[in-house]
Image (cartoon, rainbow, N blue to C red; front, side, top):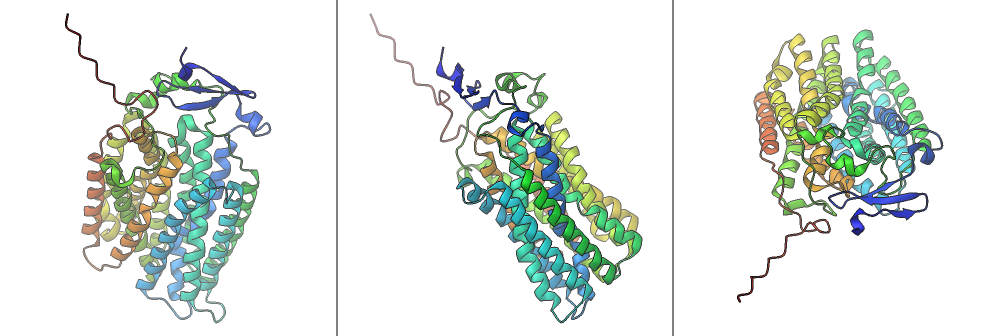
Length: 461
């Protein structure tokens, strides 16, 4: 029997390899590793922590009300703060992944520190909106962008990695749920503002309450989070059957698995990687353009319809991750992601130049389409480049949000033509995904899957 088909005993656990040579550590149940709890705890805890951190991005329209506070802020300054926050958040994700991989930072410490930073940022926003004291709103929001951006990135990286590692058999679905919490966390505060009015004093108190909730959630979740052993696989699922059986793993019907593994993100070596990176940057630009435009419009005229439109964008982005992710596993990831980005392009005129009802409806559709990209990327990365080191690859790919977010916030300042630009960006993202094909065998293929040796020529008699 070949070594790849044998199981090596590792204490009570054992290691097996599937038909592609991938290593899986089996024999340990999630309840044994988590002290009697099931691995679903490693879904709900990260989702709760992400809900508090996501308010800084999707709840930014509330922070933008600082424009009318003491000292005031121009429209460009409001968008510049959002752009700086996005750059810090997206850059912190690969940085946090590298620190955790090197042992300089633990997952629990990462969530606790990130949650504390998010709470401090929300407290700064509350002071800026309330106009209390002599502090400049601009200085307060600069601190909000720097501290809050890094904190949200730390929480995002830790929660996504934890959910994916505890659910290797359905990582895209796990990431979809956790990131849905990131977007939906801002829905309730925005709906409360829509119902009660956007008075600066009440919004400041609301941001203070959200800050306290975000801190409590991050500290509690960080204390309970655990990491599984390397290459851990659930004991009740046979990894070798999961790799091949389309009845057990239904995503195989429309999504082929990778035939090799890469030890690190392929970067510029792969045209497929470049297309996916461009798609993330362009899709993020559309999402942040919509968010920035709605936030500045709400700050200029804080109406109930404006708050509902912002809530619709956040809710659509959260629920869309679940819906788009589910469809992608059933119908094909590349096909569904392309269709979602085309839908985002179609509704852009309604988001940026429609009437009150049209803005709410189109914002929900746009949020659903653009937000659904992130969980699908996890499946695309695994299907194109394999699962080993996928957190490293996802973190590197997620950093494209820094470029797209900064560009999208800058384009949101356009007085005319913003909808046409957003439409073009969404279509370009759809084209990048549509043309991304399964790459050729990587430079470091799995053992036994390299190019076949040429046959020797038959000897003549």
